[in-house]
Image (cartoon, rainbow, N blue to C red; front, top):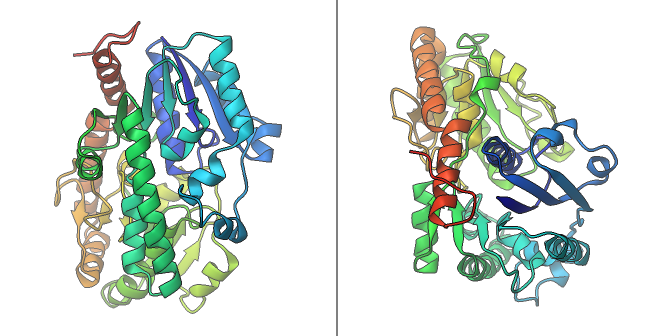
Length: 401
């Protein structure tokens, strides 16, 4: 079948969680013989020098300059009924590209990359639309509003959360189906929409591209995440200010590594008095950093969707300690495939127990690897996508057993 994928950003280079999800979906569709054309926003460098990996992911791709955001633009968008993300990402050039592609060729399905991109689709596209939901965005913004100590930010986030919820309801109801990351997200979306046709299309990693390294360097505790994304910045604060003091008492040699793109100079300076905390900055390849890790951590207090960082750690054979919210939506057994703790002292003690007992750490890491291969790999994703497409009764689809 022929699919038009309208994406927020290119799947390659794969520098963020939503890019990993989209790259996996495109690869799985290509492996099952579907012809995918991509219309995506991209930055200037990505347009000037497209990644070589595009070739194995789709039949054709078309890139539009990504709109830039600003604080002033946020202020100007306040009177708009739409949330700021939808205002910024509804772009005439992308709308025209989508209209042109739909007029030039007969597609069977549009895969729309979450609700902010829905404004770029024609009101009546004439073919089914599947909304690819990376998370339940209004819940993330509400969590920020609930935890922020800044009154203005709390009020602004509360207003945006209301707008986003209204958009999510409207856009998802217009779609023929919604592809969510997990059963937990499906329930959360049902809570705000009153019920939709949903299919679980899990986040996965290409396990074959990760060589397990169950033995780390003995002291590195790695937190992977884009350091310009609010939930990750809040998680880093929780890790450094609340968890690390107890971890230092238990394992003085422990070192925190914050591995992710775009940490601002102000954010780096925030931990200037912590010599046992370091940043990697933007890196092209995380696998060498994960290979040196003895423990991976996911100290998130804000978020939705499922965390690819846990799956990447598991694919590398690394044990992970996470908050309950951080591991939300993943079918991993607490105590054998992952360790879950929400109290900062208990979190620190769980990390210390793995640093001090490498044999147990390796056992948990390799159990996580087995879970990823079985439930969160490309073959598993292909089964879920084939089931969804067959149930939608689209041409050229057949469900896998």
